[in-house]
Amino acid sequence: MPSLPRMFSLQNLIHKAQGTHKVQSCRQTQPFLILRGCAPPRFVTVISLNDNCASVEEAWLKDTIATFERVDDVFRKEFLSGIIFTGPSNVKITLTAINWLNSEGTTWIELVNTASTTSIPPPGPYCAFRERRLSHLPFKSEDIESTVIAVPSRLRATTSKAFPLCNWRRAVKDIFQIEGIKTSTAACIALLEDKGACIIGTTKLAAFAATEEPIECVDYQAPWNPRADGYQSPAGSSSGSGVAVASYEWVDIAIGSDTSGSGRRPGHWNGCFRHRTSHGMLPVEGYIPSFRRFDVPTFFGRDIDVCAEFATAWYGDKLASNQAILPAAIVYPIEYMELITNGDQRKIIDEFTANLEKSIGVKHEKVSFNEVWNAKPPEEAKGESLQEYMKDASRNSFFYDDYHHFDKFREDYHQKFSKTPYVSPPVRWQWKLSATISKDERDVAVHRLEVYREWCSREILRVGKYDTVILIPIENISPRYRDEPLGKLVKAANMYFNPVGVPMLFPAPILKAPEFTVPIGQVPFQSKVTGNVEELPVAISLLSAPGRDLKLMEIARDCLVRAGRPTNVLPGNKLFP
Image (cartoon, rainbow, N blue to C red; front, side, top):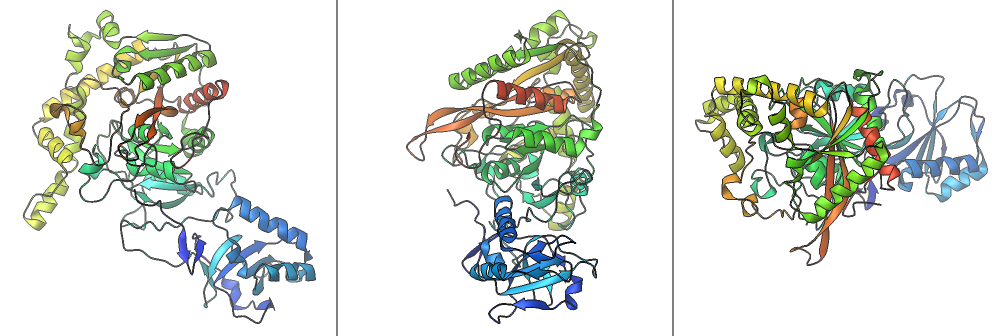
């Protein structure tokens, strides 16, 4: 397994980058103290002083630097080689403060008078240039596989009501348009930027946002899942976003997308919290479509409280604030749970279910969707069973739209190169099947999705009568090595993604409902890579009625706390604290 991305190294010093800021007033500002007679240093720290500050004392300076080190993972002592104070022009530095800075390697001290300039650099570490600009560390990589990543200092701004996401670092799946990267910015991402969040980079995804295993990722390597033995599938298609959160402590949140499981599967396999938003809460402009009826942004995090805070800031104002208080209910879907054949995984799910019962105060109901359909079928079914009526509905609707969204790409490619584009085997298989689906078949399928949505909302979720939580297992967990095709694990006929009926990851998109994925345990296996017993993460999803996003997170958090379970996961190989 390749080494994890390292911090940017320059002259054997470890640094990370901070955002650019030009100090216009520095053209008139001269150093008011130079130690050791040195030229201006390359790396400097900006320290903000109060307007009524008369002097800088050693004790205050030590406390300030200690705070920088504690709060900011970008800050390093090497940035103390130069100090820029921003404050009143008459401020004095005590001799003891000067001696302490000298002992820490400071060779340059300068003052920016806040009373005579409108451009004040925020506090934090910077790279300084001869033309008196403060900027990020100057590096550039043309290698798409580069492990050099720039992140902003956490000192540059403080959160406020207007900017609740200041200092939040987020990675964004490369299915969303980002201004400055060949396109403008997707509307849902612009919402985050407006609230102060910072994009630190885009993340890899499966080709055409399809379902690919690592060995099927032909053009670029799949991201590396850090869990277990380090050689397990990251799942997809939002694989890079799941891996980013699971790997790096300096990534707060990663944005992905979810149509039919693209976010939930990486949450499960990479062992992190993951939330699929209620449909329609966030705009989709600038987000490459797959099946607009199902498409929603999703996000990954390591801490359930951070996830709730992030969701509140991102789209909490779109959620109803006066939701009715309804009796609680827990639905344990029999058909979906029976698909989990790993005994250890099933035991972990059942233990969590018992915890949820105690937390909510109700017993779970084992519900067969097939039996409820037979007992209370929708009129449109005309005697057909659930499996008969919905047999092709998920596939024909989703596959048709997804395929035809790329018509122009295929046409343009053929016109330019006089050949069809290469696509990976699973995409090729899906496109070949999708090309046989007619528009009429697609429309019938969409109608049946709507019939199912109304039926399930009424008979299973019982919207308006109960505050129902449906437990959704995401996928049977077992070793899924990077160097093995999925065909070795399943029958050849089912080698590629082919949604028949209503698979377990389809109720949420059909219902337009939120689904929150929670890591709840680990199952052991004998790794062929390490030769040791390793542990695969296990997650469960909680599904509720549309608009109950924050309530769903609250229910999950209360359950974890009451059961004495962790409310956060760690980055790296180890899952729980």
